[in-house]
Length: 147
Image (tube, one colour):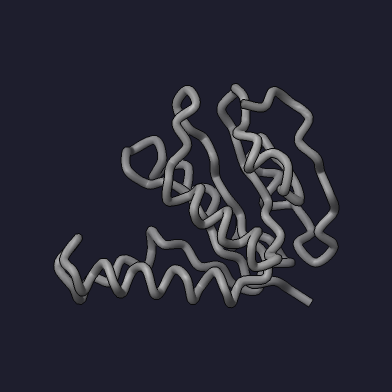
């Protein structure tokens, strides 16, 4: 059995875009991943960016993709304690729907309580995502600093 993954991640600057591309590659190389949905790759280019039709299509498409996912992978590399609100919303929605969340945080620092407690597994290297068995969903708890 292989899983459908939703990839929640900010992609607003070059560093974030580079990281999410690497995670997309890691998911594509993982034998336990049947497919993944990355909002970065689903921008509804048929609509003008940030227009009302784009907003509605993006929101509806992302919600539908989360609801059809078996697992959500959340990249939570943020500056200081400033969590990306979109990623945080996607994370919380997945938890509310009973979808396991795998967290990737390459940068050092504390993790928000509301992300550190409900996660299924916590990783600090993209390679861990490539080799993680999404069928088994082994628990890897977060044990660092919480804010």
